Length: 516
Image 1: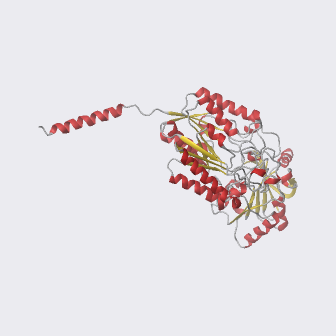
Image 2: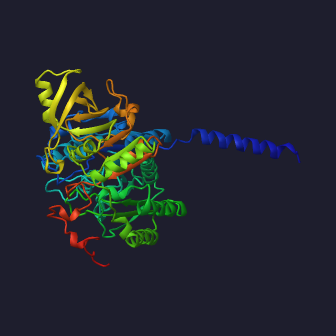
Image 3: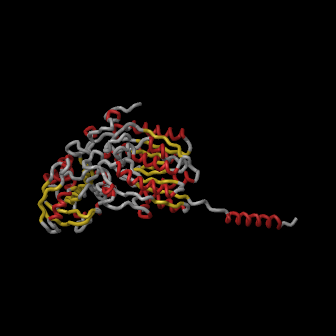
């Protein structure tokens, strides 16, 4: 027997297999439609229902690559999808932000139908698709549409049919229930507040959608409502139950392959039927596991309910003394969150800090559109003397506060056509904006001649997001939030809100939910 024959035969076989492998077709490209429709709606905030033009004030609705790079959820989804190499993205024209943000009241039904109608038409024209990604929020409120995000998923499902997977990303301040996962396959929710992980959730959505589209994941879901409602200021994940709840969700995901555990803490400023905390779990074809995880998470949230739904904060006068002591001890900069002010016009802290003699303070920002109008009409410019009332034009804003000083800047800022910066008192500065503005990073104050490092104290309109740039970076040595003098919209006193749809007696801490 020729000893070379087996070797030759093996070589021919290997060559044959290699040629066959080279000739085999690659996996076909997956087509994922992508849309965004995201709003955190304050139904108790004053004003007319939000219209189409309010959604196009900052920017027209976007499509193409402009949409795919609009925000971190979309950025994470887009980057990971393109990295896979077998995914084609089909962006659908989407609105990207509303003037006034979360200080705006109900979205008009016509507004919702306008943008969703465009998206559904484009989706139908783009068929066939292998998956759909929805960049949502979870706390959108629309007149006559009880569950807007679920309605978006339902309309999409009608177009793509029962077998095309749908994945969505959400803010942890969303209000959802089982209706959303009736139509969609995945909900991926941020686990941190401030939201460091929005990009990561976009990436996870891309992975989940691709697995499902390839037939490697059969989403099997479970949803639970623990029966708890909490103000958003209690939901900071830097401490206490908010941190431990999300850590518990991460542990489940680490222990169980292909388990997605999403927790909504809820958004109480929307008077909608699915308000309050929610747990949503997705597993790969394992209903018993999905139910087990959902039950465990819901029961845990209920066990820590007292600490999760309670807390106290200093009033403005006490906050002024805390600030003065911190400055005297050299523990500055001091970052103060005016957490209750959803309209941005409140003057309570400004008045208390002035009365106490707090100096070198930057108040950024106070909503004062009439002041900006008056400056514009007068042809004002930097260097002009300033003697006007600012803010205080809503019930929660207190009263207009007179400022005497110098206009140091009047022009564009924070994406607005005009803002104003006024120097006053002993090294103080106040920035005026046309609507609510939440400043998260101190460097965002570098507008015109403003240098944030010149100030010892920062007062911003924020509940927890300001901690991202001022506290958790180490910039501010002292950080805390301040209570409003009355139970206005945005405070911890949810029982002072005129709910019509929500029955607080069915939610802890104002009552006992069914089954508890």
